[in-house]
Image (cartoon, rainbow, N blue to C red; front, side, top):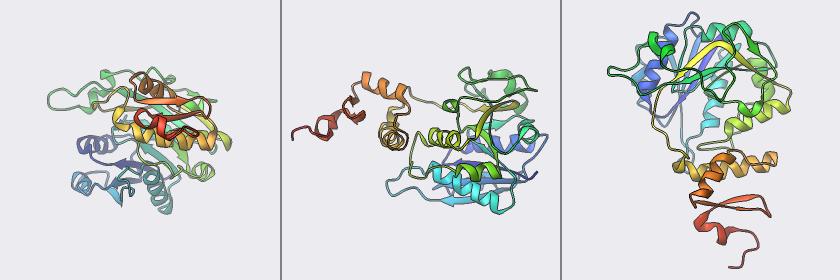
Length: 284
């Protein structure tokens, strides 16, 4: 089975370098390492001269300057499939694969299954940075997702829990899903939509033990206020496609901060400063 690892990147170069090192130290190495750089020409210098050799693909931001996360993943998948990949493994740039991640995905891969390994969120790195051999001791798998024993696979998973940090699909399963919807740009919902589409097309979700990834630390905000516009736009697109809002926890957090408002009549969310003006049927 020919394995392609696909990563999309816009910055986070130290994280990318450690991911590449993690892949080099795996018990099964990728046959093809596709890195899709979103307006990030400096990524080439990070990867050059290191193993596994990276196949760098450049994509531009959208006209609004948003990162094309969905389109970038599709671009990486097309590159891998054109080169003969049998198994597509998607890793977030922050994720360092455990040594057996690729081998485990290969062992359990079947057509018609969306494979998700465990992800552990690491604390800030110590002086001198993370050491590959110490990563498993730094953090347990995220408690919000199933974490089966190393030799087990949990089938029939809840597609609402899918995340794109670490997952794998066979080439046939990828074609069955149709890839990511490229109408999503910027932050949020494109992976929720992908999982929803997979479920609608009869693709099961499997939680795979023994395929760990370690998510390198970076600062985050709760809720992610800097992504408010993206979340509203992408959430509305998801609502149009599926009849419900994703990321509702964040939307309610934004509402408590006075940043958004919910129109119960239309089941629509709006930015607070424009809510009254933009609501359908509101006098001008």
